[in-house]
Image (tube, rainbow, N blue to C red; front, side):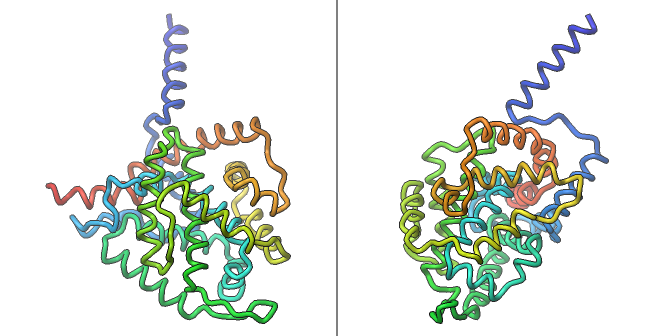
Length: 317
């Protein structure tokens, strides 16, 4: 009888895991996972800061698809790294990063700043989000320089901003679709693209895609401008050697593989990487889905999105 009950419990646990549901975790484990998340991403912000001021709305409503996609930690981590790989293929976009940031020496810091910007513009109070966007616009206006061939670049050029926007949005969406237990429908994917266009426009980008097919077409339109040169390869090496503690390396190895899997086939080929087999992709996806469950369980209760939902919901109270 005891064995039968144990088997039933094991089957029930497997069913919950397949559905993306995680049993309750003991508090010490939850705290440990929270610390590992901050260390892994280089985050310095406190999630509970997004709970204030009570009732303050965000730029996008809480029922938006962006709130759903950006709350998926592993999907966003995979998408963030994938977008950096993709962006490195544009020589002028890469030149701005190469000349005006410490990206090569502090990748974790760059990822942490990007994660905070996504968080504050998605979940933060509207005024804080607009201030963050204005601050980035001021920085971009000062980022100018020369390419190796002598031609100039300006970071706030609408075309470059569109490239960065399309690369990020498509990568975030690919990461979510790959790793979520409930991927978006085509209609929901279109909604996500259109929601993100509002943020991209505030950053100065123009002619932004409003649905999935337009997003894919926009990426394709940039292909004649893309190259994989020595700078690209140097950046790729930095990304592949993302600094983590020894006990985080197995997890990060899966994340890095998934980041390559999330790239378009043509981008993977340009970067000189071999396309993984369908079996390899499936194994990495399933392993990351399971590994991400305890992390997501912690964030669903004490992450940025969770605190933001409480803040917005307090208007009804």
